[in-house]
Image (cartoon, rainbow, N blue to C red; front, side, top):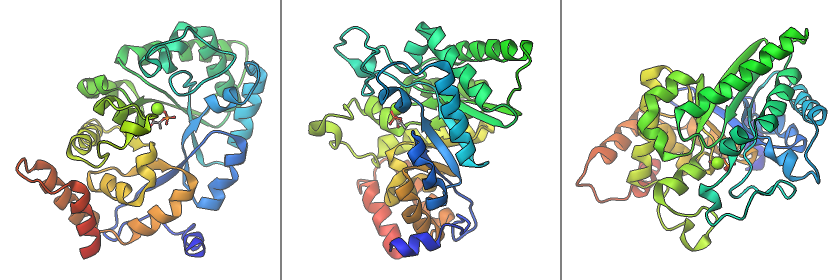
Length: 325
Ligand code: PEP
Ligand code: MG
């Protein structure tokens, strides 16, 4: 099968009925970059920049960050790279950057919250990205957004860095795309404001599921208790896709969900046209979608999700569809 997936690397990711699905990969270190060509991914949908910080023994200096991002972009050789700004805290521990002990780290001082409270840290990172992407495209997004106002705050810092660099004659990115990760349920009731404030949205389904279902993603006792392909979560995801369509805002999903073939199928069924996953999943997911009738699946999924009397688990609906089509 490995060989079969390899052979698919250069095949267009089109469903049987002609829907194009963007297949992107998740990464975080330079060693991941060769996987772009290996897997045939279109680009990097999630680059976890905190990994450079997590494996270092001290805070990476500004020029180290810049060199790192430059190397990532160079090795990506023109394929899109979506950098996520620092996502420290919660389950991502940076030993030399410890805040106070928290009783609920997942709900604590983390990600964009920490970044906005330590603007020097964020500005250094933004500047490093801007410099590294001079003359090319820079795509970046912020994690764990709760209120749209946080996006405006990051944009302001970004703007300051852009002005600073141009004042000192530095080259700037040719194109800048700014996005937000949708991981906190509060954003579900700010979808239109959110989409108006960004160029794209990326759903972090690992955290979004954790917060929506109130189950700790790292606690094996409960993490599998509720189905990621159950009605509540799929309806929630479908609302996000619809908001993207109504606002003309590109929406991607970059959590673990995208990498399992049956879940990827469900995501396409509810309207996702872009997903980011671990590189090893690209081949199997592409093999699945090449044989998929997306329109027929959409009908089946929407009927199942809209029927309040239906008791068949969606997972079974999906399995049945896969067998009969
Ligand atoms: C997510 O939460 O789904 C996500 C992609 O980010 P991470 O797994 O790094 O928290
Ligand atoms: Mg997350």
